[in-house]
Image (cartoon, rainbow, N blue to C red):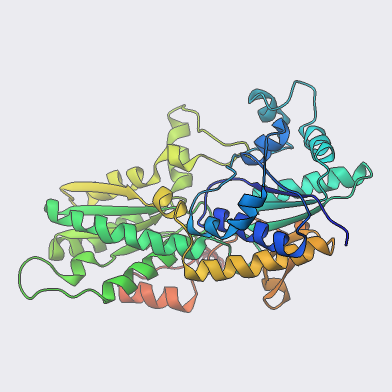
Length: 412
């Protein structure tokens, strides 16, 4: 048997799958290639550039199942783009005039790595593709097989990313507690800000998960504790523009009737408007190594809360973010099944020498396979015409139209 030397790397933000995926991969390789060395690069591409590793010892291999019980990453993450030379130099990862891709490739060569598993979103995996292409141009073959990690579920053409289902469930658990804050003050506007830069999938899925939990709750007769006070009154996602004046009129009537308003907001839903406001003031907008606006710095929830709160005469506005709570959880049973299935496919693909990102390929009828790197794209939009979302919007009395439908309407 030909034994490989395997390296694992997690990168980007957290999702409820990283630890479990690492544990699954270690367990699978231990069973199929017991003599194959396994290392993990600490803190993603940061560790690869610095040559910082941890080894899967016999004791770790024996205890691989323990990783499945935990959230976070057992080898650490970072946001490093190997083709962003300026950022790598600024962070002290490489010296001026040195190509980070060359440094990473040389480190992989020194470590004798023949299979690299990257667990991350589109940025993580496309960066891995850049690295594999560089090695190929320089006469060295490396099999790179990625696993798709993102709570946003916005990686095309992958049907469902690892960790997304758990994040939605955890966001609903988070809201189950904070929704009770409406009882602390009359005319409360409560905004639940959910992660989601370009895609509203997580916000929509979290809202669905909460309404399912709400349906299981009993309420006492009389007193000021009613189901409608805990239900959702508005859901705002990047794919569905809304008229804040029209929404304010609708929500003010709700506020007058039940003394509170509950909003689910994707952090990217109002991001463009917030960025424009910041830049009009002559202030700089912070961005990461990939050029993305740092959404945790611009506070879309606070921006919306200030404007909407004034329009609906809210006495108190409370903005709560579930993102870090949700993304750092251990995976639920549904995600554990998906992680196991994808990890198994990733190991089979890697041993066969087939690079790509493992997922159910929407362009191939949902086939689970290693999808070609050049087909992997981030920012896959959520479809607001999805039946369950349409039905949920009707149930909360909110009529919305997608950006695509709005564009067609303007043309006609």
